[in-house]
Image (cartoon, rainbow, N blue to C red; front, side, top):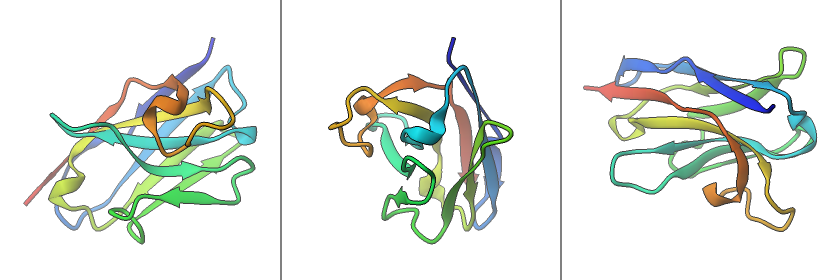
Length: 126
């Protein structure tokens, strides 16, 4: 059984930092795409940081470039999202996703993924 369990969300003031964790079990993510998505109320789920197979390359949404970093600790089967200089518009539910349904699917698109965590809420206040 594949499980993705996110943690680390919370409330933070603008300009602050948070690190999200995604603990993965039952699945080897290092050979596939794994990433973080977020969804604000009334909006479509968007990809913010995607790790490419092998972990040597990553995609970042323009809105989070130079502020967020995706990383992985393969010994712990955990993927992280370090978020700094948080803005009000970063407020959303953050989800971890893994395993493209098909190899030709766009890894930046949320419908491309097979496995999802339950999400962790990030709220940024002024």
